[in-house]
Image (cartoon, helix red, strand yellow):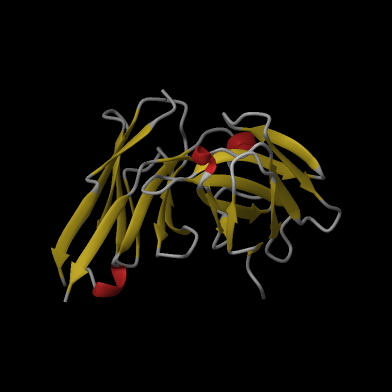
Length: 114
Length: 115
């Protein structure tokens, strides 16, 4: 119940394409869903986050779509660029006291070809 | 403004040894969390420190222990190392009392190899 399942494991798109990364969860107590971007040799960096009271959130070229009934959420990267090539992690947590105890997905390695 | 800094960046140990990893949080942050990231996996929560006390702990054995100092810096100690402890160890800092949209800042990690 504490797992967050992420797919696909890897993704290759051409520059300008819209890669989509999907995550699913079981624990309905989760109430905060962030996405992180990680480059080789670096720690994860927060990209965008959503709470279950909204179905979509956009920040720049990054969009989260959230489906509460299906217990799924996804990350879309508009007009993808080679600089977006990185590993992306979805995560989830619940409760104020657990806000730093993130449950991460297994990651998606994205390659954007020029 | 320095972000989260971790030392050392790389470390090689042998089975049965003990290791200490260090973390300095981002300026102004009072909470430090530690995560373990195995190769090809997402980070896993080890524990969180605030006011020099462990507040929360993930599913890690007692071989993993930590400490937070009055200046908010932190150490992660792992005793009796075994091969499965080889991983990237990440430190993350934030403010305890903050909207959860406040970013959780991660350091670049310490890559630990156990031979």
